[in-house]
Image (cartoon, rainbow, N blue to C red; front, side, top):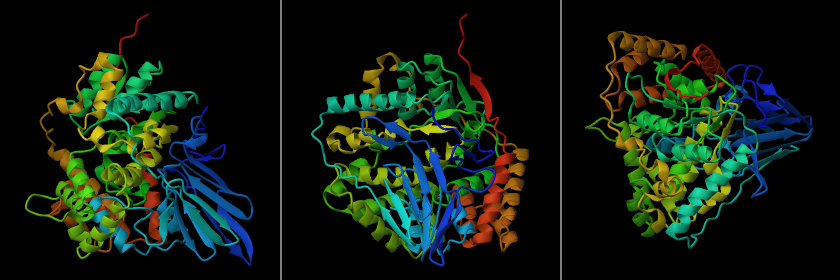
Length: 547
């Protein structure tokens, strides 16, 4: 049986709850006092959901651990480094925590990393082991940290990938069998009741079909959407497959305080992501019962390139990694920026650093130049690991355990080694699901459903949102409260409404950061979590039962 934690106590059987909605986030501080080692915090800590993989003989999943034995600290993260464990070193002193805010509250300096931020404002993520702060880093893939007699060493695992001569037919078989084997192993741990966040796409549907095939269907699937009387295209597709398989399906679209969700999300992702606010209904829902959640992270980029992949592949073959970097930054800015403007958040918050961001991003992409698909490898090790990785390690971690079948290391190595010709048509995952489960081939995906008309927002709802946003901004105690209120109410002339709100709060947190402010943000996040209702379900499909 998987170890489970109770967030109310934050500690059961050596397993510490993260995110911590009561008490402080787990941490350890070690240093020397008159030449003698000392520590403060938790001597032993296990975070996330490690699962022994008999095929590789190692613990896999998304997890972090540390152990203090009196004069030596050892810490490590999962083989892929998808759990973000942050550390800060100054002289003999080391701080370690899943929360950057906790490190700063404990005394870590918060000098900004201008180069790292130049990329973040233009791509929405941090590269390599960067964070917003120059002297705070995250452990690398397979990272192992050792502290002894005041000296800190950090080791990383190398993941060399070379192209394998795998034909299309064998690739389809691998995408069928490897995740299924991973799920078999996960189910053998006796995970209890499982819940599946279900979208209208391939990754979560494939997991649902595999669970049904293995005679272990989830107790429920859940899909979030913006408040509406109608199902959107994603929810419609999710409902359709649940009805076909006879699985309970919940819709999460209760109106929520958006500004509080933004603050909580920034705290949970340690100011390392501009996404995931939309995940907050699922976070609260998953925390309502002792469930194990199945997460489809990685299934997309590992099996099918996106619409930019073809151009990026040709650029990589020509060695023009700078063109890839430029196109990626321009594409990200285009999503967030209103018509008639360009540059996105970078032009507002880091206007003089585009050349620095371009050079750093170019060098990072070029490091994958020998991979079968350099763009895919870069995207997996940076966006999927450093940004989407917060979903299983934080956003979904309100559940008792999180299992990620596509992060089975054999599956990752298999997919990253596939020739680009095998994946380039973006149909590989579709073909695998169709071959494995032809009986549901007629159940459409989300992109086949028409989107409902935008829901009308009442004046009362708009007023409530404005009051909530103002109160949250004021809770951050800005130096110029009237200016921040005006900025919030008027919106950005350059950015769309939601990204403008996300980056307004982000910049307030970053610019005012110190130990006291970090503690204040953590307290606000915990307070808002306690005030948030876990009853997120507005309507459900319940299959008929036969007596």
